Image (cartoon, rainbow, N blue to C red):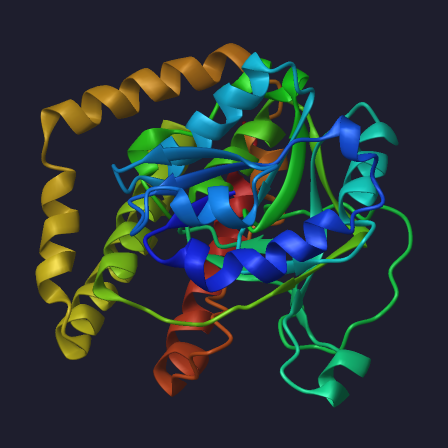
Length: 348
């Protein structure tokens, strides 16, 4: 888990209590908390969760922080790795059910927990609502949660996630990470789970939901200017790194049209300055050198065709918290129609 600034002080105690109640044998797992740009430099963790391994760092890069934790766990001989948010409460079988999912099929590369919204009342605890049953990938790099705000329901087996696994709570193993690598630290924060999931699928692994591994997420939909900068920058980064060149050519009209829309949206919403910074990022030769190097690296383990990866990508923008009539009645139908045509042309 990664703490950031005041996260440890705000969220650790309830999270800790639910981890202490896990049915998975305590001698078989360790908790690593990378306290990233913290206000207390791990002192709160050491005082309140002494059995956890606290690692201080101050760079503010979420992906780097996860890599620090993963490398520490690997050095200590761990074989499975769970990435989880700290603003959570876990059911007693959370770890056990994630491990069961991974051991049910060697072709599973990632298993995501059933993510429920943290209930705020006694009535909500009796019938909580869903945060995510696996996330949906848009063909222009956006990501959305699935089944958001629907009532919880029983799910059997390990249904495949056709989009991507939420980085809020998922498990993978050493074999997968040895093959595809760790987090790409250029992403810094946001869309790192899209990028990781795309890599896992290209390597021939499945992503599934572990529905009995339940966690409650203190989810808040907030869009800071910083968040929008990384979301915009990283959705382009993932497209430029992972789509083959012919696909990018086919998508160019849609990419340009969406970019124009996002520029107008940024002006209207007051974050045009950050949008300019994101555009400037891709004018750097060093950035393109890294993108080209990453594309070459991906080719080494790619065993799945592009058409099979993108067949389940969504053509509509499905942000549940945003109800915009222009998006709903004009942009979404046009982009969706464009995508339905384009994806039928892609045979590589």
